[in-house]
Amino acid sequence: MKYSEARPYADPERAARRIVEIASTVEPVQDGRLHVELINGPFLFKDKGSLAEYGAGWRSPSSAAG
Image (cartoon, rainbow, N blue to C red; front, top):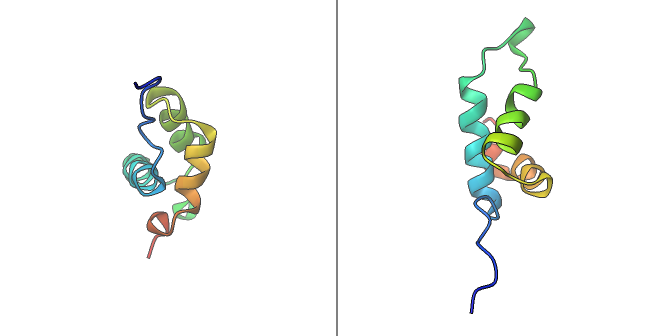
């Protein structure tokens, strides 16, 4: 029996990919910087990701720009 639905971004790699997707749509401001609230807002409120999933996505090696 399943008691709850699986979280959409429980996998840090998937969360990192979504964060990078959101960041790629944000227009850079001064010196190529991004406003972080334009990234974390959609992830947390539109996509319903949790703070733990967001943090894991940021710390994931796949989210590093290389």
